[in-house]
Length: 392
Image 1: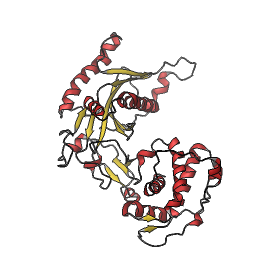
Image 2: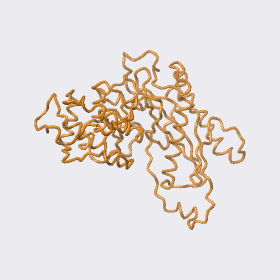
Image 3: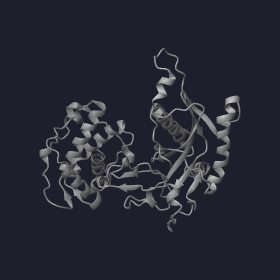
Image 4: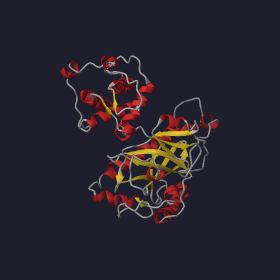
């Protein structure tokens, strides 16, 4: 699916069309759209080539249309009869285009059709823009931490050869860059009760930088994994922007100052913070019934976020028992007051709900259940399995 979308995006980019300006076709335009079927294109039976037949576009359109129909159950009349889809041929041609610079025959005649279809997909798939074209995936070994063993891959056969004990995520190919460098954000939050679910959000966070300029032409860990445990062992690229931090870390206050310098000071409070809070609340609610529940206990979590080019935060993972070692000047500034504030929330707040909570904010407290259900709280949580949440 992501490869099919990548082909449609390639068609637009190659022919100078942008997805940013959505065009909604009129009824007349829909009636006059060119007919497309699998038999329109010749099948490529040859080895590596610099010109790929247009059937790759037709196949991509078919895949995207059926995916769109699965999501919306609309436009059933627009569905194209798929015929026989050769998955191996599509994959081979896709790699020729994306990895080896091949061109696709007659791609210009599909521009409007691809544009309309991508616009429809964009309305139901908010990650469409950040997915990019190259179908890169990031793979993390199961039950590992601190960025160890992470790989970025863009070849299906290569991915499958690694075996099955991996966590695979679609790589965000179009992230927000700071001075041409990839960043991510570590956000701490507390859960002091799972029933009712009670979540506290810390107002300070930190930004982690890669030591190398961002590019998709190389899939090195040094470029694509911002984890401090990885980056602190590497030398910063000599051609990096001089405003980038030597320790590859910013306090969130420094990031907000940067946003001011580029005229985007409002996005922190209007997009980034609300987006992170929403993601943490929804994720915690989704896992609530799978977590081993202990009364009078708390958990500190570290959530990692990446930003799209529009500053929308995307949750990458949540780490239990996050690393709070004071190994950088930023961590020396952030950790001690956060630990003190944890004590305020966990201990002082019970005796005095009006006490100073420092940097923590209560962002969610679930209402107590008052119905007549037959399951008591003890029965509900008695046999729960412990959720596996990776260390940072």
